[in-house]
Every structure is written in C-alpha cells, then in structure tokens.
Amino acid sequence: MPPNDEAAIEVSARDFSYRSGPAGGAHNHAVVVETPINILYGGVGFAVMMATPQDLEDFAYGFSFTEGIIGRAGDIRGVEISRLDGGLKLDIALAGERMAAHLAQRRALSGRTGCGLCGVDDLAHMPQPPRVPQRVAIAPAAIKRALSALEKTQQLNAATRAAHAAAWCDRDGAIVALREDVGRHNALDKAIGALLRQGVPPDDGFFVITSRCSFEMVAKAAAFGASTLVAVSAPTSLALERAAQFGVTLIALARADHATLFGAEPAATRKSDGGLAA
Image 1 (tube, helix red, strand yellow):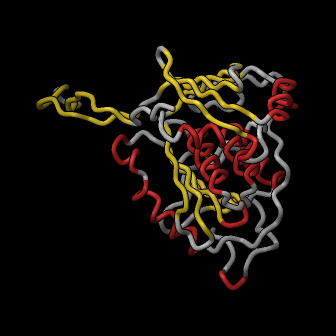
Image 2: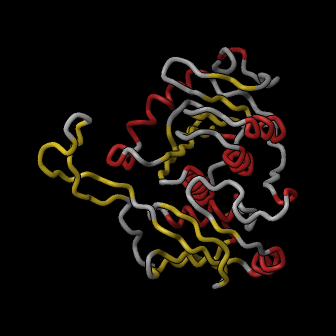
C-alpha cells in the first residue's frame, strides 16, 4: 500500500491589513489538505468522504465500525490505499460473512466535511447504537488534565489552525490516542479505528473532541462504547437527546477551568472524586 499523502502543504501567502490591503512580502503558510477519499468494500463503491489523507487505515476501521459494517477489527481482512485522479481510493476487504451482510444492506452515501446524514434515505436509518452500560464517572481532575494536554498534541492543527482532533484519554486523563482531520467526524472515526486495532476497551477512558458536538459525534462515541464525551464546543439539541438515549455523559463548552454538564448526573458517580465537572 502506498504511504498516506501529506496532511499539510506549504503555500505562498501575504499579510493583509484592513487599512491598506496586502502588506509585506510573501511567506510560506501551512494549509491542511482536504481530498476526496473513495471508500469501497471488496471493490464496490460505498462513499466519497472529504478528509485529510493521514491515518487512513485507522479511518478505514473506524468508519466501517461506526457505519455498522463491521463489529470488530477482525472483520476487516485488509485495507488497500491507492491514488486516483484528484483523490485517493480506500478499498477495504471484509471477511466473507461481513461482505455478504454489507452487500445485502448497501446504501449510497455522498459525504463531505461536516456531513451528518448524507445519503440516509429514511429516518429509521439514523445511527442507533446500543445503550452504553453505566460506568463509574470520570473524575473532574482527569478531564482537566486531558484538556490541558490536548492542544500540545495537535500537531496538524498547530501547523494549519484548521484541523479537528479527537482524543481517547484514560481514566487518569492521559491521552492514549489522538487523531486529526479537516472533518470532525473523520477525526473521531480515525481515533476509534486506532483503538479497535489496538484492542483498547471502551470502559477504560473517555473521548475529548475539539469540535461542536452534533448527534453523530455522540452516536459514534456510543457505538464504540464510550460512556463519557467531552467537547470543547457546544452540543446541538439532537446531540443532547441522543446522549440521554444512548447513556453517554456529555460535558461540553470545556475550558481550562470549567465545563458544562448537560443532563442528569449518572448514578454511578464516584463520590471520592467529586463527581463530574460542571
């Protein structure tokens, strides 16, 4: 398989003054790469997603899992990445029974950055992961620790200021896996794919995301089995509905010194740790 393309490229740019327009000489500026990724299963087209071309094997696993095409990492036999005119092709080989099930339920999906329900032709086809088992709450200090470490580990965003991140953190707040992408959904899929490939159990930590929290981000976290999702930005109304439905504790508007807890505090709160951040 060929290596992933560059996640960022250097382009020429100039400072721009609101008083006088372009100012100073040209300088190099890093820009995040956004490219079409054609996703196929067994050579049969399934989706075209706009994504950043790094960690694509993780993306293949995470996307397949959160789309319900696979139930575990072992359902994928291999991933082949190749270049197309104007983009990349991600051909995923499924185990025999999974491929048969996929072909029976195949749907067309046209994806784009920020996509939520592209290609779903019936409301009944919206993501419906099983309810996450109730678990001991994540300690507030762990959430604060994860947030303080988050920015330092976002290398692509540091270079471009245009990439979302999704991080899986252990119960002490240490970042176990972080993936970045121009698309917030893709970043979370990549992180989930990395966790599946590493065999990380879902009861061992929580997700932190840098984007707004839409219902699909909650659904993806719930599909993995995460009981807590921390978002730097705000949630939508449907995200709150789905968090309650799927049993996901949602903490949003997370800043260095405070956050907002949406919904009721779970009964499994660990009192010695002071419960959840609010």
